Image (cartoon, rainbow, N blue to C red):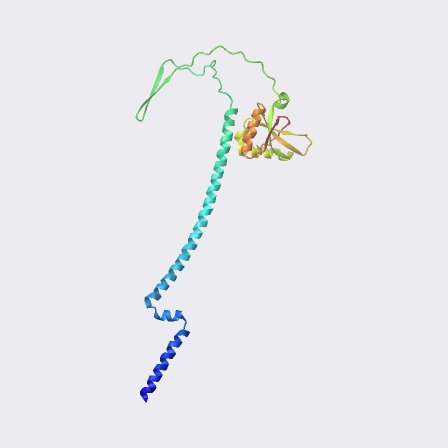
Length: 250
């Protein structure tokens, strides 16, 4: 009798256990069946993911720093290109406006050098010989042209002289400041040019005219150079009132 009751109890427990397993989540059952090594592997994966997130954040910050440095370098490169462009514009004008090679005055003797004198200097790796000879005799004197009377205002003496109007209309009180600013930024372009203010003497605004230049074609070439450096320019007759620049501003 006892064995029969025990057998019935075991059979009922087996049936209940088979049905109860369906009510338990599969994750719990899988976790119960996993060995201890598999659990440690999951923890390692979590730590690796956290480390990867930290590395991603660090790389993002370094990328922002590199982008900032690249922007600064690009700005510096732009400034260098702008300055080199200004030199490319100003150097040809300097060469064009430079006076011709001055002739040597051979009529005045400034020193006496004997004929055939040679000086030798010992230098590293050898010697240097310097031979001095006198200048050839002066040629026939060229007659000088009649002196040209000087004029206070070149525009009044030569009505066909051209200049260039720089910038836009501005108040008369700001003309000297604008001219000084142009000299600071584009000094080589203004070599040999004098400023005038155009318009009526009692007007509130004026135009700054720089000149004189040789002809209209030269004025147009000069305007092209100013326009390359973003300065408004227009050829016009060199006529107006000389600009008075104070000592502090000039």
